[in-house]
Image (tube, rainbow, N blue to C red; front, top):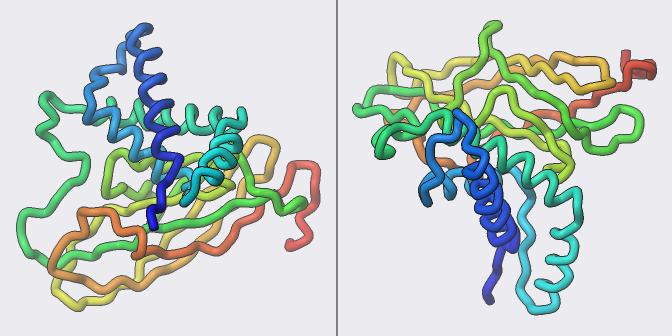
Length: 236
């Protein structure tokens, strides 16, 4: 049985369209629109939008109609533009510099899972769109493993209030060492009271750096709720 993610076709089409439009304007930050950079932007979007899998011709027609709904395309374009800007901001001549900072030895290292979470309106329980989520540790912004993953990041309607972070690996003293890391999320959105959420995660050191994305190795942060400025938070 053949399973296909229709979002791949839609995202590739939108990224190509955005690149063509940006190339005509030619802003100072736009350095390259080669195939590699375009596919980096495509990957950036696909990692952040829900897939739409189909196995039949009827499924293709039905799902295509839903995908072409205006808000879905608007969110894809917004995330796509964000991805294009980030890819261009880390662009190096001839693409000789990898976006992922790799270790060249077998020194012990702490590899972190992908952090994922969801934000909601505290009154309606609907996914929160346009929220900015910042991840910090010991009061400092946490560096990402791949520079195309932003911190802070933004939620969109298409991503249904979901956000994610891929943290940079940190050197350890020895293999098997376990350390508890403390993190703080700062969440803000227009018209809502900002909140802070703290959590801790024990991590055990390994000998090899996890420089490739593994979506099965993830840590789910508890659901977070924001309340409008004129709404009293019943949880307080």
